[in-house]
Length: 327
Figure 1: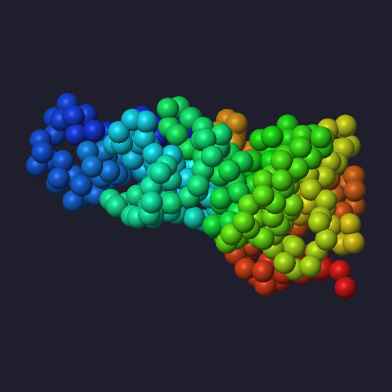
Figure 2: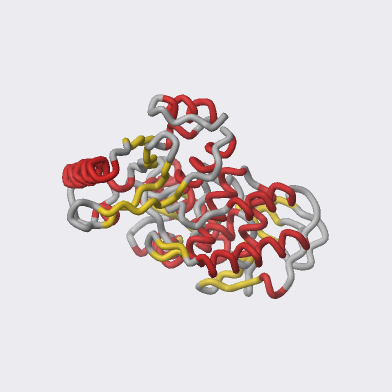
């Protein structure tokens, strides 16, 4: 199961030529290992084992690229921008695998691409430059706005939801004051901005909701909006027969049905399983669903990543459970 990593872990996964020599590799061995796909050359003089790279999500692979680029740069290093800033902040990049590292070289006259790095000619205020574990990048707010202007709605909304969640959600509970403060701050920033993509960016910021806990939930909300649904209930609390709390991703009152985005991580990711086997997780889910149905009388619809790839496909999935847009 692929895993999520942070900057420190990405740094630890990178190997230099000296590291490989200390493991007994000659220069010829290093080139052979690259050709045979045993190790992957990330940047000049920076490598990662193919097994380690294969065990990462797209975000993790890109973060390794970003860290390698930083290590190969002269101090203080470039300011990473857009998707490359997003992975430093730990934001998701829904189904996006960047082919290049994106930086904003302060004072550069023209954007250009060189050695796998795209240098963007974008204006960035000093207050919008932050440093995370020694790496400079755009601030979280600026990064969300840049993604909203330059990537797909799916990528942008997933990132905006994640940023809002970090600011205003603890567990399943939304701090409405903190959420309003985030939305107001981001809306003001968007209103002051001009240029390509800003209209959609304003919509993304207005539509963001930190209660979406996974990118798949964010994209599900996006597809629901495209289908004409009003904003559904999110993270609906149900008190079980013994007083236990259950939380359901979506609530569709007209259809008397809850909706659950079923990511595979909770079955296969050891951290998310919390020491339980996949079979134990499945049985816990069954007990949970039995309790929810028994208390509420509502049905539970489940869908996964493959069902939200297209609006029409998602509509068919929902219709099978009797969930249809109003009108």
